[in-house]
Amino acid sequence: MKYNFNKVVTHLATGDVLTDEKGNDLTYSTVIINSLLAQQANETLSGSQKFEYWKLAGRIKDAAEEVEITTDEIKIIKDKANLAYNTLVFGPLYKLLEEDYVG
Image (tube, rainbow, N blue to C red; front, top):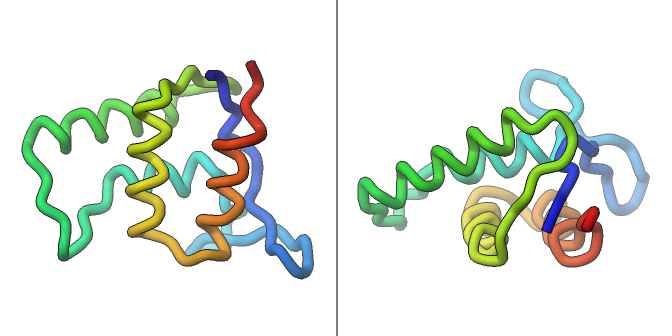
């Protein structure tokens, strides 16, 4: 399925655009890339997993608008983002992955 991850993440209650630690608008692309490149303390990853996550993060980073994501990659993104982000950020990402694909 194709997705546009360049959209901004908004606050559930206010609709305000969320920002990152530098004050930049938080995009789904940033959330996914940060999630894929982060390794949590309780996570054990093989070298091949790290490489696959890095390649996926690169594809998303390089996408001008839409990027093709497989169902297996969607599961990886959900699993990694669930560990890296709170509900305020994870909820909209999950919704995007389930409902807002382009085609």
